[in-house]
Image (cartoon, rainbow, N blue to C red; front, side, top):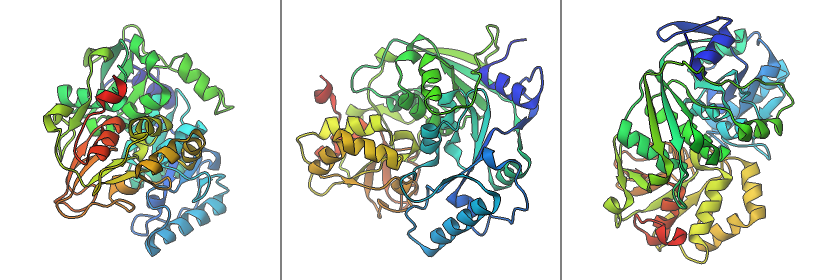
Length: 417
């Protein structure tokens, strides 16, 4: 019986010859990532030992820079934990700061063919690297850190085969919105991406799509490996790795083909992502108070370049706040060197340090009562980015940037014509 990519990785990590949907796989964790939120007093427990300090990373991202005493206390606890156990991969506030999933991508922590766990739901973004990556709760996170293991129920897999190529101005976020609108939730299922069209998707585009797997309610979201991936990883890790392909006779719950060239820019209506996608034209003209580009899904260098391309030589509408948050400080520096930051600032955007920030309604862009925001981030449910009465539309960075210029939801078609 053939296995899918996720099944093969879970089998390898559990020492089994075969795993099938419905089974529970107890697996070896290759990398465990703790966040600043992991050290909140109400959830943190004294740890007497760790399994392997070299397999642990700590990334401060949700609460940086510290805006409260509670946040500063979390950071202090995390630093003390790292020092106590000799954990070298500590990404503190400073030059190596960033959103954990983007930090994982930059530093090659998600090794193809292995299992990675992280204390955040968007851990599935590491599936772009052919890694079985999943967010876990506090108790499971502590278990992984102290024992080096985790357990997962094996789900069925839905396979997507891409053909063709995205047209200029159409992005991986639009691809996600298309799948979410047409196929809905993937509860208790894994998602596997591949096909000839995959080669035209950059690593950043794959990261966007893999990260948004959490919004499908998928268990694991994973890409087939190819030369693009192998080259990317060899530039970022000295560890040997063995990528995993699906077996030719792998069994899928469903297999679907998507022509990338047929897609158009889409917008998700407020309060939900699944089954909420409409063409930009259907909501064009809707007044906005804020436009946001950032998060683990859309804070990449590609996203900042796209936003700069849209706003170059133009100005953000009066009365509209345009907030841009790079995924890491390294991305910030690269965007600065490329001139994207200057272009965005000249247009009237506010560019913040790398953090989860406005995406989680934490700081640097919280929404007030009855405000309207269009966001290129991860979630748009009620209360996500601030006051519960605020309305949040979700779209690609190109659409968000164009909307910031108009002060209303607008497409960026003329830029890419």
